[in-house]
Length: 271
Figure 1: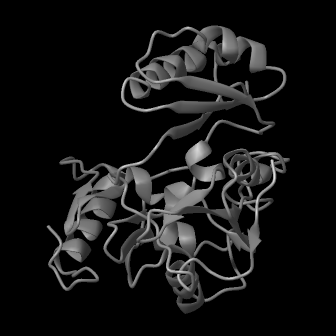
Figure 2: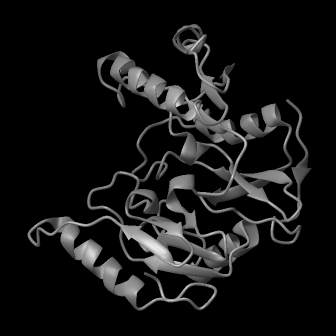
Figure 3: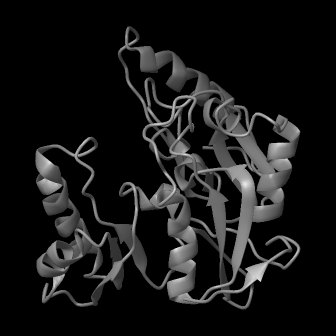
C-alpha cells in the first residue's frame, strides 16, 4: 500500500477540489460497528448501509472498508449483491464509519489526475468536546485509502479538518461555517486568515463564504454538509424551518440573509 508523500500543496501543483457533482470513478465507505454510535449492535445501521451501497453500485463501483472484526460480516452481506458495478470489501481498522470526515479529500488537475489530502482528524474536537477517544485509527483511514488506491498524498500534519466541514462549487468558491472551522477545538493556533489560506492552498479555491453557524446542536460543531450545499455554481440549498420558535430558525435566517448578499468567486450573486 505504498504512496508518494508530497511536500508541496495542491494549488502549487495545479490541483483543486472538484464539485460534489463532478464525474468520479467510485465511492468509498466505512462499515459501521461502534455500539455507542449505532444502536442494537449496529445491525440496523449495517442494513441501511447495505441498501445505500447496493444503490450506489447500480451506477459506479463501491469500496467498503471494514475492521478485522467485521470483515467477514461485511463481506457476507455484500458478496454477490447482483449490482451492475462491483462492491469491494477491504480490511481497514477504524474508530467509526464516517468516511466523509475521516477519508481523504480528493483533488484533481486539468489532465484528470487524482491526488488526496490527508487532514488531521481528532474526532470532532479532540479532548475538548470530541465524540470519542481514541481516534487514532480514524486518523489513519485517509492514508490507508490513498495507499490502496496508490494515489499521491498531501498530509496536513497538525491542521484539523473533516470532509463534512467544507463544500465547494468547483469554480473557486468554498462554503463553510465559523462555528466549526474557527472552533477552539480544531485549530486554535491559527487565525481566520490563516485558515482561509490553508483552504486556498489545499483546495485550490479563491473565496470562502462563511456562514456563522450550522445546524442547532450538531455534535460536529456545525458542519456545513447538513446546513448548506452547492447544487451548482452560484446556487445553494439551505436547511430551513418555518417555525420561528425553533432554535434553528435564527441560524437559517441569518445564513439566508448572508447568502442573499454574497457573491461567489466568479462575482455571481448566490441564489
